[in-house]
Length: 104
Image (cartoon, rainbow, N blue to C red; front, side, top):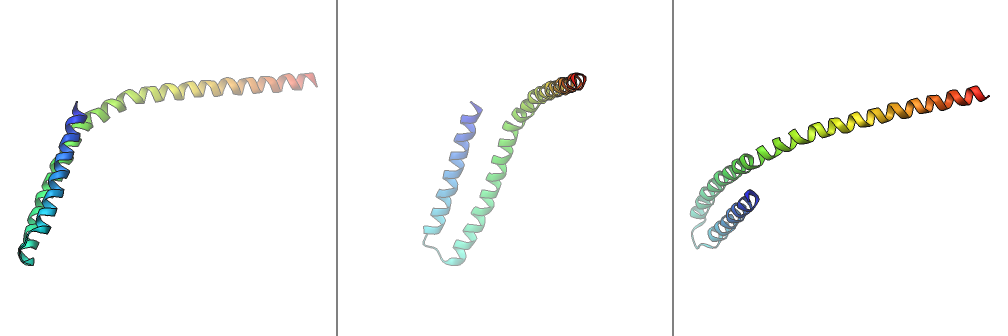
C-alpha cells in the first residue's frame, strides 16, 4: 500500500512540476518577471523534492533495514555451508592423493 501512495505522490509532484514549468514559460510576461518567477518556482520545486526525498527515506528506510536484518544471517549460513563443502572437498582430494600414492 505504501508503494501505491508513494507512486501517487511522485506522479502528482512530477505533474505539478511539469505544469508549473510550462505555465511559466508560456506566460506573456517580460523577461525579468519571467526569470523572477522561474527562480521562485525553482526554489519551490527544490523544497518539494526535499519533502519527497524525506518521504521516501522514511518509507523505504525501515524496509531496507528489515531486509538487511533478514539477509545477513542467510548470507552467513551460505558462507558457512560453502566453507564446510570446501573443507570436505579438500579432505577428499587429500585422501584420493594418499590412495594414489599408496597404490604406486
